[in-house]
Length: 237
Image (tube, rainbow, N blue to C red; front, side, top):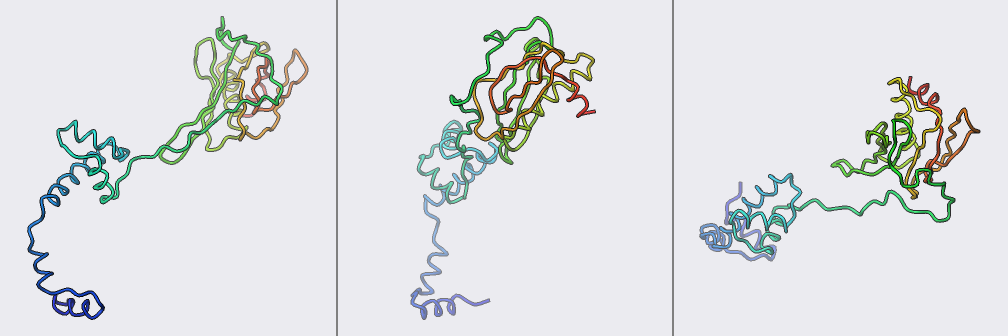
């Protein structure tokens, strides 16, 4: 290990003049009032930030300190959080899951805004949304039976694909078929009047015993009736 004097000589020879007395004076100097206060505040700031799952930013940390009776200027909290390398969780850009497409033909609203049903398996409504997690965004599709308001089918994925909403529908058909209450002709499946610009548009055909097969793009809003659950039950069995 090198002593103080050799280090000061090397620094001076490289153009950074510093005397040994300057080093010892700085070492033995009593910490300033600001330095002591900053050290105390850093302890409190780190605690508040950690206790709140490290998601609090400057504003919330500052307000929490004041609630605890610890006075501090907001700019001081911001400066000390920068020194500590702490920052709050940042909200990303809001994700638009559905965008209305006026250029596409809209299917008729068979429900006529009447979201009631006298018995199960008569009217299902479907939609999908997203959930922000620590690992990223997860998209969740679901099918709800209007009669009981129960979620009868659901699906989750990390991308918006047609398979996401089709899997939720397949699960609903499969679960009802397995429970011994299969969905038969007359079932109305309803979704909103918007279209996701990122959903892949792969047509899916569902045949019915009472009518000719009908194909609808999975990304397009539509209301249709008379599903055949046999394809779903075969797929999941």
